[in-house]
Structures are given as structure tokens and as C-alpha cells.
Image (tube, rainbow, N blue to C red; front, top):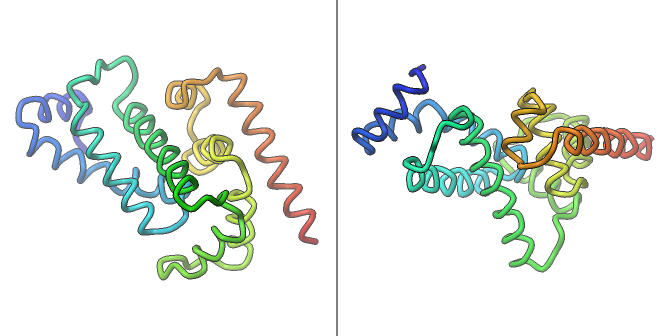
Length: 177
């Protein structure tokens, strides 16, 4: 893995080859972060591509106030939330858990069992921002301070949001018994 400062300098010196290195190192991580939020493979591919286009166009605006990873997660999360909102606006439907799970079971890349399917259904029932907080904390094991920088929200609000998300997920599983 390339040092962050070296990577930023490589991108600024020769944007095309430096950006290729960035994509090689970060594509999979960004894809899976987005995939957990949008569920469907093709949606994740689209949102990941949009994320990297935005990163490419704005890399010169990166000031180093946060780590490059936090900056990339911020862009990826914002792109994903915007993608979900556009999808909701286009379909006129909320992302109902049933519709998301139906997409997931139809996805050739999903290989989870029934418990994983129920967990995804529970997560899908969360509001988009709460879902993002849950994913960053649970799957990415991110610190609240980093999440605060990504989501532009206070640490206290994030802790409360995560707590509510976990409670809703637990309640979902209790209701399935």
C-alpha cells in the first residue's frame, strides 16, 4: 500500500497514473462500503463509479484536514445517500425492506444464509443516514470521531443514532420470533 502523502503527490503530479494507483488501492473498500448501503451489486457499481469521478474532480481541493481515507469515505457516503435519494425520487417508493431483500435475493453475488438475509432486511428498514452510521460503526469498525468528520455530525448524535439503529435491529429480530 502506498503512503498517503506519496499517493496524493502522485495524483497531483500525474493525475492519470496517480489516480489509477488510488483506484487500485481503494476501489474494493469503497465498493463494499457502498454495497452495504445500497444492497444491489449494479447500484453499488454505479455509486462507486460516481464516487471515484467525484474524487478525481476534487482531489486538488483535498487539504489534509482529515486523512485521505476519511475524505474518501465522506465522498462515498454522500454519493451513496444522494444515490439512494435519487432512486427513491425516481421510483416514488421508499426503499421498503421487502423490496431491498427481493433485490438482494435476486442478486447473483449474494451468498448469505437466512440469518444474513434477515439482518439485511432489518438494516434496510433503517432510515438512510441511520443505516450509514450503523454500517460505518458495525462493518467498518470506524471510530466515532472519524464518523463525525465523514457525516458532519457530532459524536454524541452519532452515538445516539447508532444506539437507536441497534435497538431497531434487535426489535426487528424479536418481532420475527
